[in-house]
Image 1: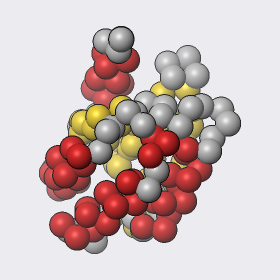
Image 2: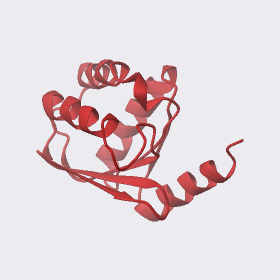
Image 3: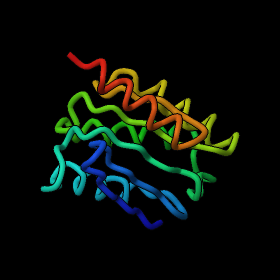
Image 4: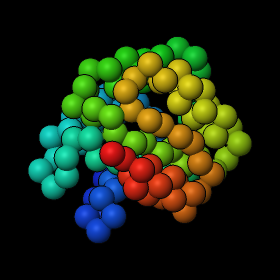
Length: 129
């Protein structure tokens, strides 16, 4: 799996994308990189694009392990996280992941396209106290 992160300072959004097979090790490494980034805060609003991600290994246990990894990074604070999942299977599994993550402080939503994800993040940021 390859992971790319690109920060857009103009709209204060970090764009991440996964390509290929998804692994726990790379997910944890990516979170370490994200929370230690010098160019953006650890709780930066983030869009994860799963358009080219191989999610064939995803199941309930896989989702639980991803959530366990996320719990190891409290630096993410109350970050807003948007997941872009255009395919039906990826969308459904991402919704399961987001609903199981409701015990974490981050707000997470799943979208079919980046424009909707950006609109939700912008609206969420505009409504922050």
